[in-house]
Image (cartoon, rainbow, N blue to C red; front, top):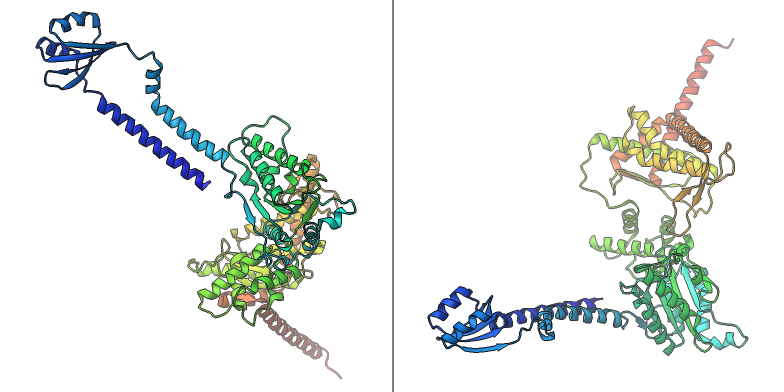
Length: 614
């Protein structure tokens, strides 16, 4: 693309120079024009020596040799005057209707069109070259192997068989089996699909052609199909080899049933060319196509049928063991301190992909370097994780003491509910330091990765979200907008509990929401239902939230002293971790036991006074 732009700019520059040169030449060769009346006056005064007539156009010289040009409306009446004053006359036929005259007037347009033709020809015809295809030359010690791929053991084991296909094709063909033509790697972004494809080539030590799906698509129809054919022609010369197409959904999207035009037509032609080439492998050609996408739901069915992409490998985000192994791979690349606890870090980053973990390690190293440290310690990983998950710390944010206090009680309300209710994720950290768009945050980290959720866990999650709003209401007697996001999340959870997970006693196990397919989905869409059902759903959602709200209010009202203690600790320290929360709770419980013991003793003394022993 860079070469095409440079070529186009050079052609436009040369065209501009040619037009300027043409205009200068015309201006220099065309004599200055004078009015016809002035010409007649000079002719009467015998100042004209010779003229050249071309239709009504007059060019000539005066007696001093100065050239001029003019135009005569009536050449027939001019001829007697020229003869009378003995002027030398020459003439030629008008050129307005000749081919030469037309071409001369069209020279600037011809130059512009010629430059544009050369530019587009270079873009369309020469676009598929070494700048479009990168081949990994096979070496004995490839820089990328399966040792560099961690956290996705199942996918790696599945793809080791592909390496055997490439290394020992006769092992499988001798029994009549056919080597798979294509492997589709599907999964969320950042899970290691491209790294796996490179590892396959590194393990098999074969040429590796790598292209992105968007590299095939151009504004000129037919270019993408041409590039596909040239790519496969080049690959057949270097068999066995691997062709890797990243983001194949750019060209492999589902074809429309109607008449396509423009970019859609180009994509469909490119897809058709790819399908034809995948069907055209001969038995002695060992070429495996590896493609990656995070949108398998939009791919054309013809691309996924057996005989094309025979293997479909799903790569999900790693679990806690996988995250630990990925951390071990990336931590080897930095100067890690001895106090780094990789299992603890892996547990605290649920949902992180391989790319997210690599970014976490890099951020930790950058933070340690910024502080002038000699190694990366656990504190750097904590700070890097907070930056990634909660946003950049807003140190210069000006917050009044009143708003700090409201935020402290809000976050303390979340934390106390999460701490006291059963079947909830443990508290990891509470902070009232503004980060991103939030003024504070209560962070919970699950002990293990949860694959399913109980109804009790879901209801307790709603209660935790409501804890901040209720704490503000109990302590300050008023409400703020700080709980807006909490209410939004609680409403969404309650709606999904009723309409998607079938946990309503009134409606029963009926789904009125449906999860969208695709790894980029996550958004639920409502199924068609009656107005009466909608009213029942609204009533159920409100009832769930109201019941959770009232139960949370009773809990926080009972533990108001604990709420004050934890909020004051936040105001002093700004950040409180799980251990400090346990200390505060322990002190509170001991104090409560002492107070209850004193109260019970006072009651016993009061009873003994009323009923003295005889």
